[in-house]
Image (cartoon, rainbow, N blue to C red):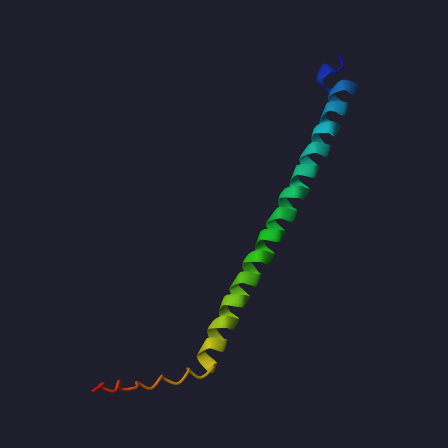
Length: 73
């Protein structure tokens, strides 16, 4: 006697194909969003590190000299 569970089912086949397509599209969108966020984070870290090094290497501005106020007579 043949096993009825091994029989081909066209409705189930179409449903699984459609589900596979939807899941594949969602997976692609999730991966691309992850790549975008990774690139944004990497750019922010690089900018912060560059700004920190440039701030450390540039000389500070000279202090302003205080001027004394003359008294009016």
